[in-house]
Length: 200
Image (cartoon, rainbow, N blue to C red; front, side):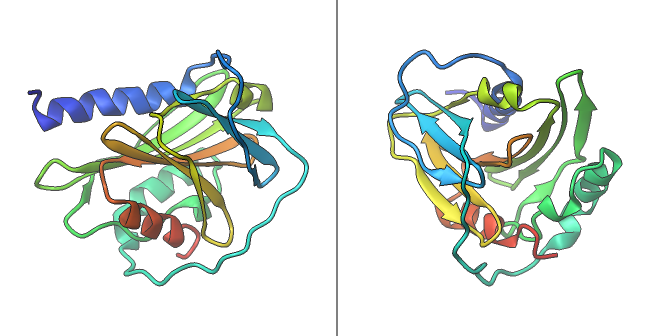
């Protein structure tokens, strides 16, 4: 059995790779919903976005204990790359501490990510990625298992939530910017993080 920190390193690599790998869908899309001008499409193995015309947001953010200071360095990294800093959450589960955010730019995208981990080696990774063209987003896929894909809105963004074995992923996009939260935290904690985005 691999050590949790080894799994974390592999998991982080997989998350970053999933955010930047450009590859087409290998099978027909199984289902889809409208979300902020995009439709999420998925099969048993992968999830991706395609353009759409309409958008809607319905729900009100849930109350959550704010821990905004843990995201300060991440917020500053977003500002340095001209991301919208309001895409930063303000809440994280008790006991989780952040690493230093990392960022880099390529010809196709800018990316900032931050890893949180607790004393049990549970973790989640927050990633903001901005493509130079919508074409890159359409060709980007996220690995998933055969479980259902659900939607969850914080009143400003509608995230798709899906699982991949022992991790959960929530992902949103406006066409160029992708916000992704991935980890082995509970679904309730994942939703609280989503609720806190833009609440600072």
